[in-house]
Length: 190
Length: 155
Image (cartoon, rainbow over all chains, first blue to last red):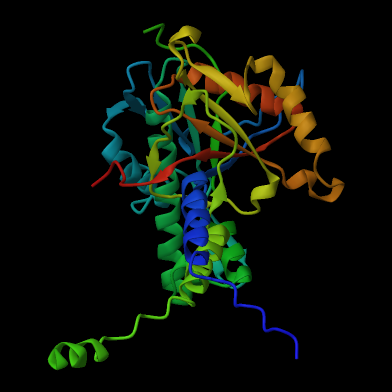
């Protein structure tokens, strides 16, 4: 009968795996990448004529070098931007200063008063990036809230819980209509 | 004496630590799956701003990163700089960077290539605008302003 080989001591196995664990904890980071996804417009073709948009349909947001906001010619605090954007798109009182609406038939939703409005965002070269992101975020928040409201009233679900077709329909009714102006120096250097 | 002997016999047996390693290994695999390995070293401070309407970045292998911020090392000055991969760059070099990133991906995936801009909150828009213009020139239209999830400006 061959001699029985002694068992391998596995006591230090835990120590080794602990070491590996700490190593991975140190070199890796949990935070997933999140952010605001945007699509840049293609460069304008030389000689192309910009589409004429009715003045009342453009919601002008200017951010100057001192990070102050001018919304439709009125100095505004950033906290009010979301409400103003919503009001501009929804135009509940059918004011002639806010965006025009157009009856459109959209699959799954039916007739919907789609706004023709566009947000035009322009910033200075000296604007802080943080402010710019806040403005982008507030506009996105306004659009998301409007989408949520529409989804709630039509499908009785929040926008995130809709299926793909429904989500597409709502996105069609309320598109992300944000256009960024061609860069230009306004407001001078800081 | 007899008393002491009796006490010794009743000693509790040692806890079996054989399965300890298995548990730790489970931890290890768990962490390996949910985390991502840090990409290169950052030469610039890029404290991204916070926002509420954030979306998760899908398909990490189709993301190329551009960092903009003030260099950590003081000898490179106080002006914000662009970092591509592991070196400082000028806006003009972005075209080449994007072309390289594209070439490294499958042909069918190239149109989904997203550029993640990790920009410090305090950086001014001028340099960001330059980068965006370069991206437009090279046709990398999909971008993502990297942000943390945080509170909004409106109450």
